[in-house]
Image 1 (cartoon, helix red, strand yellow):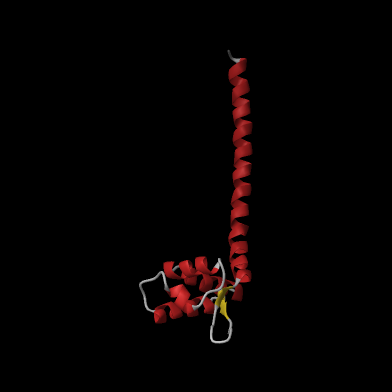
Image 2: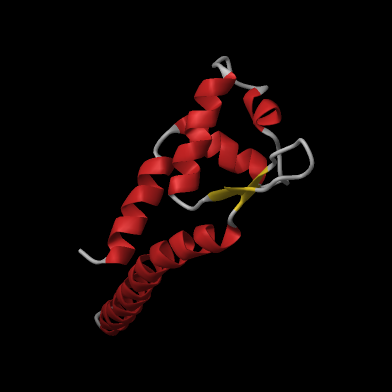
Amino acid sequence: MGPDDAALDVAFLALADPVRRSIIARLSRGPATVNELAEPFEISKQAVSKHIQVLEQAQLVTRTRDAQRRPVHLNPARLEALTAWIDQYRLVREAQFRTLDAVLQSSAGRSGATSKDTS
């Protein structure tokens, strides 16, 4: 297991929680403060802060300082890395399905020709 595998594990574990996925979804529309992120949840701001820390450790979000505000930002590069990892397997499966489709179509074409010859 390499360093990339460990980073993937941390990121996918972070995304396993529905509150953290909701935070990511909200941040996809733009940066937000902890107070703004906590609004839709019936949990404490401290609990939301802990969720944000998990997302920060997974490098899925970052925080900046803007005067008195500390907005949380989505880290699109990290999400792209996760998407790329998923896509490599999706593309392999799609190629396998295309091959299977071609075999089935070829087989159907042969069986269709055979049934026409016997009628």
